[in-house]
Length: 101
Image (tube, rainbow, N blue to C red; front, side):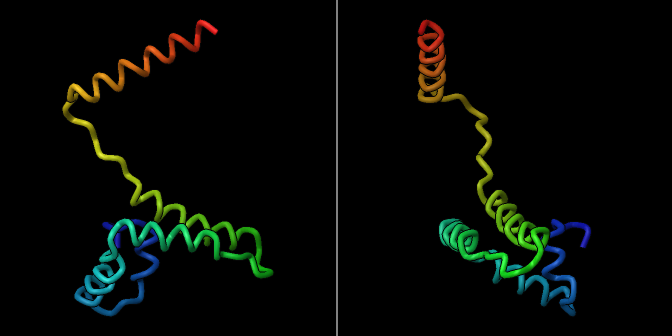
C-alpha cells in the first residue's frame, strides 16, 4: 500500500487479492479525464454536511478536491516554441504597460 496515495490506499485497503486491487483501480480510473472531472465537480456540489461534524464534511470535500487536483496536472513545457515565446513576450509588455498606470 506504500506505493499509492493515502486516499487510494483507503479505498483498496480491504480488497482480498492483488488482482482484485488492479481490477478495482482499473474500473476507478478508466473514465476519461473529462468524464471524471465532470463527476468530481458534480460531487463537490452534492456533498452536504447532513448534521455531521465540520471535520467530517471537510474531509469528504477535501478528498474530492484532491482527486480533482490529481487530474489537473499541467504538462511540463520542455521546448519553447515560437508561439510560447510570443505569448511570454506579450505578458511582459502587458506587465510594463500596467506599471505605467
